[in-house]
Image 1 (spheres, one colour):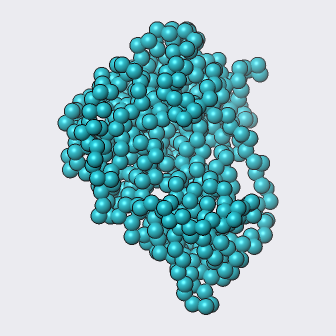
Image 2 (image 1 turned 120 degrees about the vertical axis):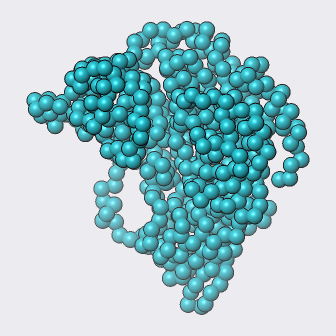
Image 3 (image 1 turned 180 degrees about the vertical axis):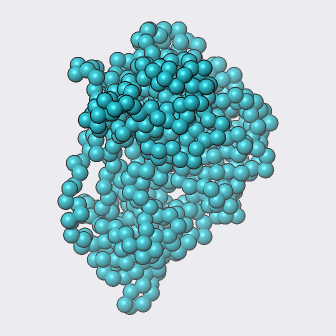
Length: 588
C-alpha cells in the first residue's frame, strides 16, 4: 500500500454514518484506504469522550460516551477532520521470518495461476500495512499484498490451525497468534510471538504498522532466523513510532518472580466445588480493541457493584462471578462476604450447625466454616465479594477473565484458593432492598429495547417484523461470549453476499446464515463477518445477562441517535419512531 492522499472531505460528505447502539456509530467507507485515513485522522486529534476507534476493511467504528460527547458534537468532530490524509501511515516496520512450508501452498499456486516459488517470492516481496485487528488477541489483518495472490478461504475450515501459521484469504494476510480453528490458506509458519503478555504492549502488530515477511526456508536463512529476536526485527532505527491505540496503555506491573515461593495467604476461600462456571471479573478492560481484545468484565455490572458496596469495597473491584451457583468453599481465616445478582440460596456449615445467609446483605464466614451456594430459582449470574478484595493478578489493567481471548484468570477448579487482600474498605453497607431488582425466571419473557442497525437494511421487511413480533429462546449454547437465540422463524436476509469484517460491540445482535441471532455479551470478538441487525440498549445488557437458558426474550425497537437526514442507510428515523410508538406499553 502506498502513501497516496485520500480526500477525507469529499469522502465524509457522502459516507453513511450508521447507528451502533446508543453509544457508537459505524462509518461506512469506500474501501480500506479511506478506513485507514479516517482512523489515522481520529487518532491524530484525540477528543474527550471518544472511547475506542476500530478500523476495518470498509468501515470505522467509533464508541463514545454520550454524557461527555453528545452525538451532535461527534458529528461536528467528523465534519472538522482534515480534508486530506495519507491512506497508509508510516508506522514502525516489523520483519517476520517465515518458513514457507504451508499445507496450502500448492492450492494457492493453482488458484493464482503461479508456481509455488512465484507465490513465495510475491508474498515475501510485498510490504504490508496492519489494517485492523480482531478474531483473536494479536491477530492482525494485513493488506498491501500482490493482487495476484487474492485467493478465497478454504471451502472447509480446519478445526485447528497451529500458532504462528502464516496464512491468507482474499486481500488479507495474517499470522495466527495461537492455536485456533481457521479457514485461511496456510503458506508457512513463524516462531515470532505475535502476542506476549510479558511485553508492555502484548500485541506485536497494531493498526498503522508495516510488515515484511522474510523467507528463511533454506539453510543459511534458517540459521539467521534462529539468531533473530523472538518478537520480530525493527527494520530501521529511526522508523516512526506506530499509531497509538485509542486508549494509551499503562505500563504493566513487573512480573513477580517470587510468586511460586509466596506463603499461603492467611485469609482465603478454598474451593471444594466450583459450580458450573465460576470466574473472577471486574468492570473489564475498555479501549483495547487495537490489540484485538474486547472489554470483557462482569456480565452484570450493576450486580457486581452492589456486591462490592455491601462489603465496603470499591465498586469496580473484582468479584467472583457464579453462573447458576453451585460453589462450595471453606474459609481460611475470618471473612466478610456478600452476594448480589441472581438470588442464590446461601448456607453456612460450621461447628455450631447450619445457618442461612441472604443475597443482598453482608454476612460473616468464620475460619473453617463452609459456604454452600445453591442454584438460583431465577437469573443466571451472582457475584460474591469479600471485604478487603480478592487477590488477583492484573492483566492489561484488569483482573477479568476473558474466555475468548484467554487472558486474565481462568475459571475456578476444585482446589483453587482465592486469597483475600487488605484493600482499603469503607464500612460494611446495609442491605438495600430496592437495589435488588428482579431477574428473569425460566418461565418469564424478558423485554429488551434495541436500536436498529447498523445492517438492518441487509434484512427483509418481514425479518424486521419477526425481530419484534416473535419470542426468541436462549439456548444451551449460550455463554459469556454470546447468547445464542432461537426463534420460530429465522431472520431472512435481503443481501446475500458476504459482509467484510467490521467492528462488533456488546449488545450486538449478529445474524449468521441460519437466521438465528446471537446476542454478543462481555467476551465478544472485536470484529465479525455477519451482519448486525440491531443492538440492545447498553443499560439493558445487565438484564439480558440474567436471562437463563430456556427462558425467552422479545425485542422492542426504540429510536437510535439522531444522525441527521439520510444517515440511516435508507431507513428514516421517522420509521423507527413510529415502530417505537406502536410498541409502547408492552409489558415490562
